[in-house]
Image 1 (cartoon, rainbow over the protein chains, first blue to last red):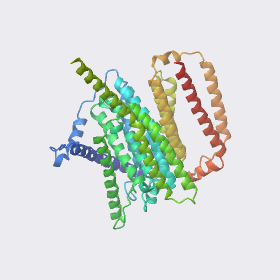
Image 2: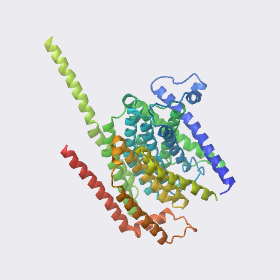
Image 3: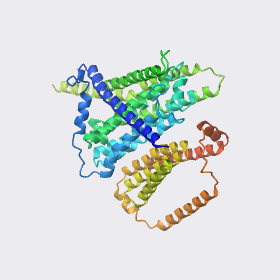
Image 4: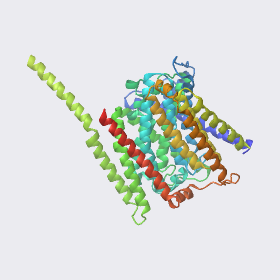
Length: 379
Length: 163
């Protein structure tokens, strides 16, 4: 390793940081616009063309804001927590390809590396919660730990099915295996499991119980302000983008589009655009879900994770491994079984997990009926 | 040359982390120091070209074990640990640790691993070896884990019935 190598690594890291920051600014703007359109509003309109410069204005405001340290906070843990959350989110991008031949280091164990590194960000949330010396922050940190650790299992299992299917853990090879058929047509159940577990890992809306404003105020981030809070914010949006791009690379065929025209450098640039467009579609679905669904309760979240997602993920892995191992079975059994399981799980969710809610609604309505009746009787 | 510098930096981190585990009076600081030491060990594995071992170290120790320790600590009062740290069993534990250290040092000097010519083992070869030549130890290890899992559930269930 020489000075030139060091310079190369430095330029990679700074380029990656710059592009991720620009992507985060874009995502923030997109989220506000998508939410606004779904709720029949205009969203940010004042700064720049249709509010395009709004995220930059927000960033300047955040950075120039005062950093507050609570009097009882544990100083060391409090200041270290944003770094522990941010570094894993950033480190993942070492092995994620943006497009054809556009990857910093194509690791043989790429997917395994991504899984291992992403686990570390839980610690940052716990540190933030504990360091703030705030009841709500500690509760939020504990909720984050429970949620993230239980939804990691279906996420890893969904990744494992793809690894079994493409016989590799290298992301570039996995995408190359999908040049004919993207994995979504072979593994629809895997996509659904991965996407739901990914949403829970991100802590985005149906699963955002660890920083739910109405329950734990802001979770681990209550006490943070200014630049340190913006680091958490940056990490959250980078993670959103990471899960979306992983969905694209693992299930939606990555940079493969039926016959990308041109060749050489032009094709590489075009493949980056294909990946970006697919990723932004997935991100929009995440924003759409945020605008549509209410938040789950913590017990609903846990029972859904352990009683629904994890068994389905294990069944999926077993079926895929069996069919890949016994060569004489035709491969088209796999998508059929996957679709059957998907429909089955939809039916189970409909029957089992919505029952509690329906019961609650019925109890409430029965009570109100009784009340009305008694009032009528008195009258 | 640069890998030597990196090795010294990582070793310093491991030593600082280990010292923190032992000398820290605050139990939460001690567990964060444990995390530092374990992640540093993962770094040393990377320098020895054992990337699979490094990733497993991060996943199991960094992600799972330290998180579980912290989870347990935060559900208990910190004052409870103050009294625990004054128990009189320290000569026994010191003796056992010393014994383990001696066994480890003898083990390290007995093995004849060539540390000068390291080669990267392909992950596919590693996994084939694991399931072909080391199949029975692998299964025994998973059996032990299964027993631990069932044992934890059984213990918890009895507690639940008592209260």
